[in-house]
Image 1 (spheres, rainbow, N blue to C red):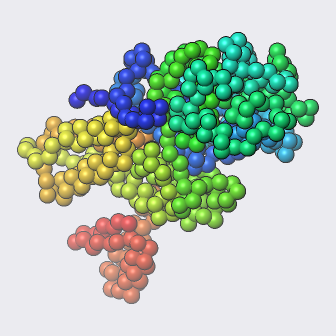
Image 2: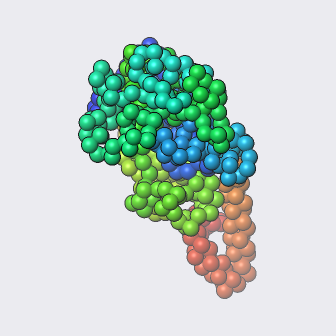
Image 3: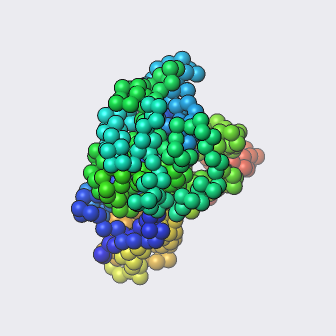
Length: 489
Ligand code: ZN
């Protein structure tokens, strides 16, 4: 079928057909983590959303250069250019070098993303490795008249920019409204206006991370890195820029202003944002005490959690919601995801064992087309999953002898089921450990049931009933057969 991928563009606020600037090449930039703490659910969602898009675009035949940065300098505690550098602060508290903080948390981030089966981006640049590029960007913006120096720092002149280009095109915010909602500067500030943002900050004497520049010993503003690295690796104009919706304003709005002010070009064709994760209906945050790291989830070590959840359960749970919907975390929802994925994975095994008939009533091409249609409609993964569950029903009813399938359709069914479940949604059969545990469990249950058979042969019905009742309590169903037994849980 002819695949026409439609994506929702946050810039135009509507769905658009995806047409890369230099097809089949696609440039995609996604804002990565600020590496000063462990990866949590809020990191998993953008990583998995853009992994889905990355996988699907490659499947459609695009050559994708996927750049996802690591923020290791310049992200201050407060988005309005105030407070300590997040990484500098962690380094100070732990009495280690900032780059030790960065190495430690970057490695842990990679480990968690690997467990979630998130493919590594093509390039993963660090802000601290691109100070020269950020200085050059700042120089260019000053040269074009959209930034000013103040006491060794450099600020972007939002008001001046707004007169020639429009500030707020992504977020829909209007500068005059923004002003009326904030207090006036008290005259102490280095900024001319409260919405001006830092391109370069002069470092205070105690600030650890600092580099020489034409203006001062200092460090780049947070927004500068993404414009500088996007430009370096993807050029003046590229296809996709993504990230979580929380980055839309001010981060991405400022990036657009920097790009336009430095190159005169709009730079990004499609802006794509994933929605947030809430926990039992509440925003997640360290201060709210409902903060769950991925490590907590995988080990079950957090008060909020009833049990441990495997990485694939988390991945499947995230994909069960459309990326632009909010997604509410709860133990119930995760346990439902765990069961759902297990059923689909069992379906893969059943599918392998199915035998074709000479004639059949199943049209598997329809399933395949339905899955493509859902993916083409702005990556509608929950609908893809719904189609896979429909296919599962068919698989089970063929196995039960209620329906039949011919060779051609069986091949299509196998191909489509595996393609969408594994290659595109990116789920995996569970890890080696879980697989080993399952093997051991199977052997133990078989052994106990063999003991039960012996007891029955010896007419020791008290023991055989005891074994059956105890296993039933554990959720194991036993079916006695003429020549043995079958069980499932
Ligand atoms: Zn960014």
